[in-house]
Image (cartoon, rainbow, N blue to C red; front, side):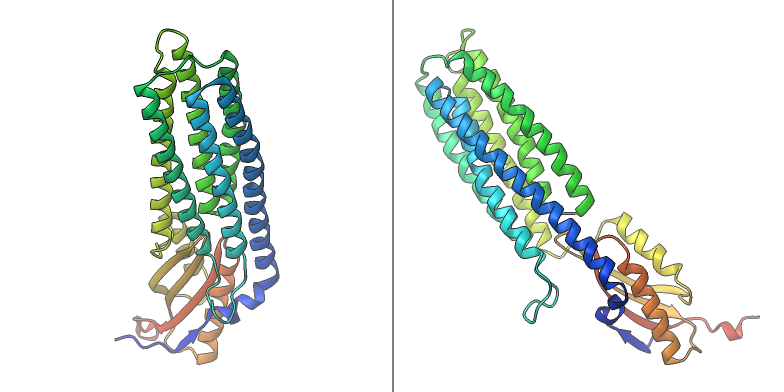
Length: 317
């Protein structure tokens, strides 16, 4: 049975790297919030344009697309609030910070999408039963034009999410991609209504509704996983192992556990050191391990438990 000779909490080890690490976190936080604010501005503009043109031009599909953008407005606000709360530092009541607020904001996003999808589906089904006149031609050009900013925003937010690890920003990227696709489907429905398919516009609106609801389910699933303390991905854990094993004085890793909190990674590990070292020497090795991991992207908390090596080097032939 192994006995730990030192337990070193993350706070003391991280103090040595506090300034650069805090700057990196603040940089990511600003980048995430900037992406969310940009998303909000574009969603408001697109919602107004789609709804006004859809109503005046009598396009059920474009109105459905506008309601989707309206849900995106509420989603963007929820993501901004979630990112703001998640960026707060640890306090007396939240020793591990507030990163899970981002997952809560994702839940709000999913509910908004599901409600918007149900409303659009109800309207589309009514349109299928009683097809109206074909929409105006210019509604087609608005639907096609709306695809461009949404596609650009989806790509940009995906890039930000990869850099920062933010699932809230990633949810926005998925939502924008769905919105671009729904605008394309709306344009197909409008076109169909002009070539002898009176219910084409309403059929496209129903497809858009199903896409919106599917996006809501996917965002909810991601948020649920985030709230269940998942481990970091295999590549991140492999990088952590490499950093630890290359730290001078570390002879092995007895245990490694990781936990995600939003975009942040908490690390709990047990290392093996020479059993003949003094307590101070083992403590210094734990410091070096923590300092090495503190410089790693996204790692925000490290706890190191030191065990004596299983094999006594002094007895080796």
